[in-house]
Image (tube, rainbow, N blue to C red; front, side, top):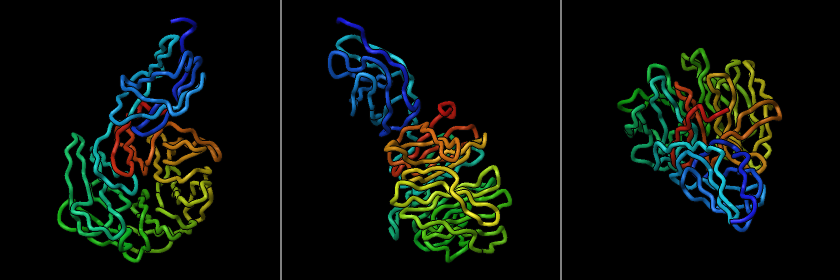
Length: 333
């Protein structure tokens, strides 16, 4: 081998899920021919290769590890990439998971609207055991878990909010909620349900329902999160590719808070009160850390992601259209 070999400067972002695309920045990355690249020992083929930048898809079953680039001029190793662990497949989540204080995770095999699925609710224990439940209603969508283990969920099939106690059938709590999708709870126990046609409803702990705010309708689903500032945060993806995250005050006033994003979906706050959102920007998809009204930084690369939540230990639980992943909290900035 002759000449100076490749030099790795940075992997961006430093965390990913299978199917995501990360950028490898460096020098002489294509010296002497097309580079041979590995992530954690698994080969991947760049989709774009220039001397200073490689775009690297993360293949299925890739493990966390160093990135290696080999060219005719030499080999370089550097830039550790943390890859999320797939906890479960054969799912159909429509939003983020619900996570209990003991690490229990609830997600769904929701199905298309009106489709009857044998066991649409799925519970995964902290030690990885999977249980499936048939609560009765079709298309469980938004999820919210109470400290006592009671699960609330919306059905976008019949526009109803349900309560499920882990056995038997789910009990209706509120009806006539439109195409009920997103679900979030405030500190007082009130629940907020997003009708993707444009209304967010508030259901008091006593079960009283009233419209809380209006948001532009979504082509897919509303996603809701209650913020540490006692405000409601909402995403409503449209076809414009310039959608904001909305912040809704206690009086129901909704204003754009951050963005614009391409098809923003699930959002969640970590223990430090930082806001993360599943979205795209500039053609790059994954999870973004919102750092200001017009500022967001992609911190996890991923494809076909739907939602996220944070577990009691700070790990990030992420849903795609067909699977559930765990990413160590240490992988986030």
